[in-house]
Length: 89
Image 1 (cartoon, rainbow, N blue to C red):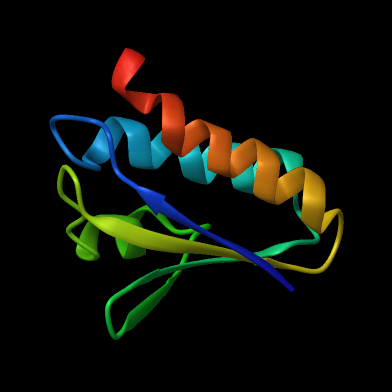
Image 2 (image 1 turned 90 degrees about the vertical axis):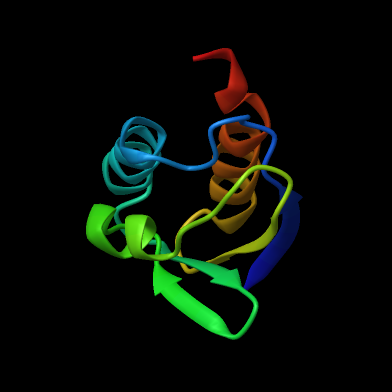
């Protein structure tokens, strides 16, 4: 299991479009990796758009990205990088 804390830099937070892109990337590129997002006391499945949207992540909030199984290092780097560049959408 690998994890990384990330501050959301997208001024509009984590709305439908970036959530969809993130989930598609997680499912398509890392099918054997469990992806979870933790915000405070809440942990959700990072491969579900509905779960991602219910998390309600806003600008400047911190989340923790957790990956387990499959190519963990690659998944953590790719998905973490995605969070760090979504403001460019």
